[in-house]
Length: 377
Image (cartoon, rainbow, N blue to C red; front, side):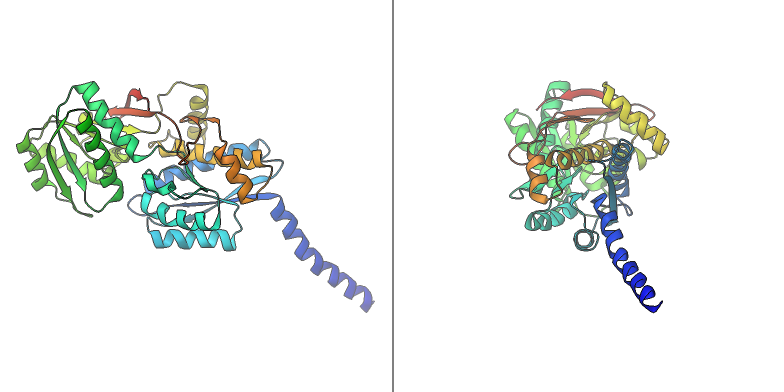
């Protein structure tokens, strides 16, 4: 009897090791990193919503080669140090085979360093600074890059408004803002447009009236604002108080301004480049929006939900094409990507950036986004 008990105990111990291992083999774990709380949580949650929607859909269809996909999310609160800690946890403790993230440029840059060193496949849906993928062969993105946005908006204000006198207000020390400012000004020079005022703000500034007064005195036709929504809302409000009645343009960070501004009518003078429009007319977009509404009860308010969905799609398609969860095989499959996403056809150039067009949007009196045109590369 004692021998039988000993055998049973030994078998129990063996199965206690084998069963979790078998279960792990049946699940493909992908890590997700983003600012899910804090001042910029709307961007992180937007990306997460899009990613999770696609993961739900692929799992409902049977997963990848019969294995379900599990997203393991970590909140880095927009902090680069917390982002790298999240990366380490996901890779070392959770055993993920790839990463989707991070969201903002600076945390993504920090995480991308680790991913490149570890040869870990990584896709960001929203970090638009050019250098994020530079000399990092395992790092990709489904959003277009800042230089393209600055270039596109300088061309847009010339083609759409015939504007020749421009002003720029940007946040000094913010890589996203500075990068957009530089490319906008460079293309404006190519276009023969005059920059009549250049004003800078500092991080966490909430009073922009001194800079806006100088801009008003320079009498521009258009003011370029490379900011995120919370700051853009304050700038538009204070510009209105000063009587600065001009056209404002920006990039993808403007998309969430509606969440931060009280007088929605001020948004009618704001145009910006974005990665997606809910008004795009394709069956894939319609299906994406229907699925999003069914899961979250509303349409996506920022384009990064679409690029997040596409990031998950591209990563899962690469794992499927690789027929493996080995990092090298996944990266090779990522380079060969040629898939239709909700934000358009997705292929990658030699810099691991997507070749795609930009959507130009405006707002109506109620603050609702209005699709204006598609700006080709």
